[in-house]
Length: 113
Image 1 (tube, helix red, strand yellow):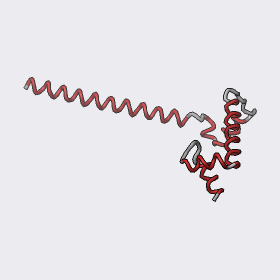
Image 2 (cartoon, helix red, strand yellow):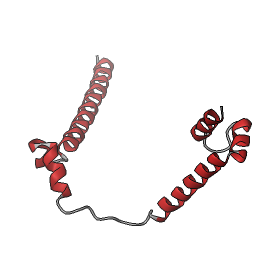
Image 3 (cartoon, one colour):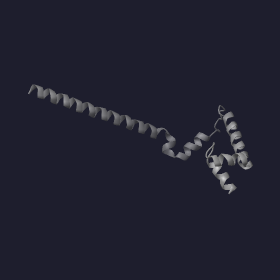
């Protein structure tokens, strides 16, 4: 039963239900796990501003694994999607303008006729 409570206490971080909070206060295993999590959070927070350079050749290995087409220009798919979005927006704007123009011309012809 104690292991189940420890497992549930790990799944529900923070205060959670009162029964789990009481378990965390009395269980040495859960207190140690909480201390490890807090220490890990502090260690990761200290690394926040640290920049690590990629090893030499990593970019070429990644591009080689992507395949010939993707390795040629990995941004190709992004560019194609952006161009398709712009073309669709331009087509929609053109269709809207044509519909508005047709409506104006129809009203104008009715007013004259």
